[in-house]
Image 1 (spheres, helix red, strand yellow):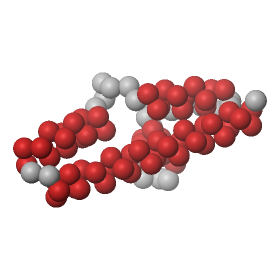
Image 2 (tube, one colour; image 1 turned 120 degrees about the vertical axis):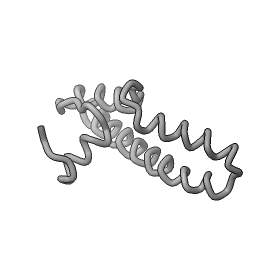
Image 3 (cartoon, one colour; image 1 turned 135 degrees about the horizontal axis):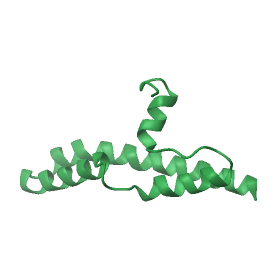
Image 4 (cartoon, helix red, strand yellow; image 1 turned 135 degrees about the vertical axis):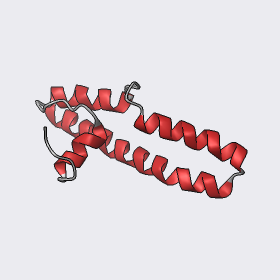
Length: 92
């Protein structure tokens, strides 16, 4: 079961990154392709979902569940965790 959990954790992390990249790419595309009265609410909603401190991301909760099953430490936030890994954010 541990190997299956590791594979599932990898797939969750991969899909999390794909979602974040697509959300980041969609903001300029919506601004270019749609009129202002449509693009502004959509971009505001995307930015709110991406940067809100009060919303709990379901993918991060799922990743933490599989992290604990595989014996890894849980993370607080997906982006801040990965920025720390590549050295762009200082450790506390």
